[in-house]
Length: 303
Image (cartoon, rainbow, N blue to C red; front, top):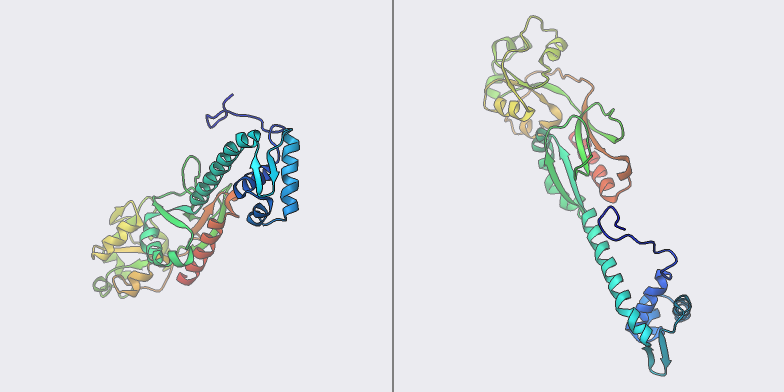
């Protein structure tokens, strides 16, 4: 009968003696004496002797012949040793492989967040997550789906109310107009936005809410160029093609370097933000705990 992995299934209960006894047998056979095996295993010589007696009783045969210079395997012992040693070697290889897999962490996030916020953090990964190989996947996702993919965790934009996931708030979205310093010279008050191109991020543009926030009526909030990502609208703003609504949480480098400026103080907060999300069953994984701690620290510094 084959199991779901395609290998032969078997019920080992009642067929195998205790694994510690088999491990002790392998160690004693290789060491040649119970005392040497005891030192290797970090137990007493009497404990080794008891494990071998238990194994021989379970198998109904003698595995060692004792003599003054040490131990010699019986014919049954010689039959058992290669199989037992190979089984433990394969088990150790499988465990090593799992440890390696468990140190790879694939994190998904929106492209703009990756470019504007996460990439500047990459230099800190070898220090803060020294034992974790962080791999980045970038694409827009408004729902944190983890079915049928290799994503360990994601950073998702929204309100944090998704079902069946842990959602850790990282930072809020704070929107305000941004543009080049040259274009900003033409913008003394929000009223001046009537005369400049507006840049939009589809499918939802928040210009109408920002105009409402500053009390500016009668402005066509739909005019101007639309882009399918925030990153494209910000890139267009960097090229002087208009004014975009930028998220201050993502704009630190551009504002610090003077590539873009925020000519007005009012900031629009729609109650949404960026959340680290992952299935609840992964909460206690060391790599997830390390990622959560690191991102919270980074978001706190950025905020």
